[in-house]
Every structure is written in C-alpha cells, then in structure tokens.
Image (cartoon, rainbow, N blue to C red; front, side, top):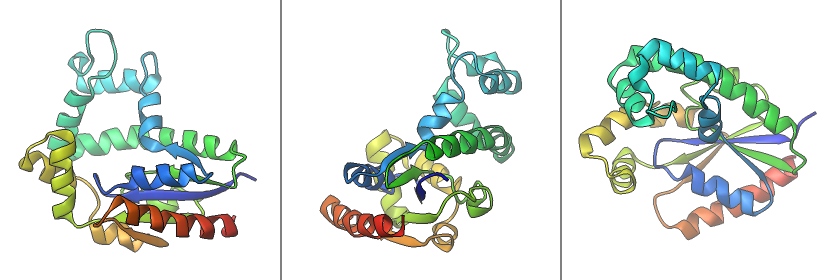
Length: 201
C-alpha cells in the first residue's frame, strides 16, 4: 500500500507549484508531472523517438534533445497534434508518478499534475486519494503568464484556452485554494490543508 496521495492541479500560472512546494516544506513528499514529462522524453527514450518520427527531425535540437519551444508551438496550434502527444505521454507519466508515489515513506505525497482534468481526472488516476485545485480567474492567469514567460497576450490566451476550463477543474476538486491575493495567504491555506491531509493519511 502506497502513501496517501494528494493531486494538486490548476490552470497555467495559477500558483499550483508554489502551493505544492510549501506543502513539501511541511513534510510531504513532492512529485511533479512536468518533471516526469521531461524524464520520459530524454535522449534515447522510446517516447522521444516516437515524437521525432511523428513531427520530423526538426523537432530535435542539434544535440539530439527535444526542442521544447518548437514542440510547444506545434501542439498549441493544432488540437490533433496535442491529442496525439497527450495519448503518447500521459500513460507514461501516470505510470511513473504512481511508481514514485508507491515508493514514498512520507505521511502523504503531493503530486503536481497540471493536466489532471484534461487527462481523465480520477478515472485515469484511481490511486489519487484527494484533489486540490489552485484557482485563479483567467485574467490573473494571463497577467502572470505574460510576466513569467515573457509571452504576448495572444500566446497567453492560446495557452489558457488549450487547457480545461476553470469550471471543469473546480468540478473535480475536493479542496479549492483561491490564489488571488498574497503568497502569505497561499501559505496559510497550505498550512490548514497540511493538517487535514496528515489526519486523512
């Protein structure tokens, strides 16, 4: 039997990583689907070979690693390409996260899964015990995204539109963390939920 698993999700630039990292500082183990997503496409992996075969060799940098910027551009411009990529990567990411969660000896595990809603929610993550959604309005997401990634308003809108809606995310939540004010408020929310999660575990 693995550890108690809390999946943290939210839209892009919602603050889900900051929330999860604070829970980690309080003693939870931290896993991140984005980190695992990079691991499963490392040079020499079957997934990277499949991506290069599908998109062409120009999706690789000269050193043979994945050109993430080029791939991001391709998948945000085409729903079909995004669907193909997700069908390839999501099962690999899920399996590795589950394996890592099972290996944990912490009181509970926080797993950041940005695309939890899009990738089937609880149906495809039956080993997740609880879902926490870090929630902000889309206007705040866009502002933060432009500041953080130096992207323009049009690209920010596309990136937000490519994800599940705010309502869809809230629909799968056990816990909702509003992140429209300060980092201190986010920490206070995390402290309260840390107590809950340790009790549930």
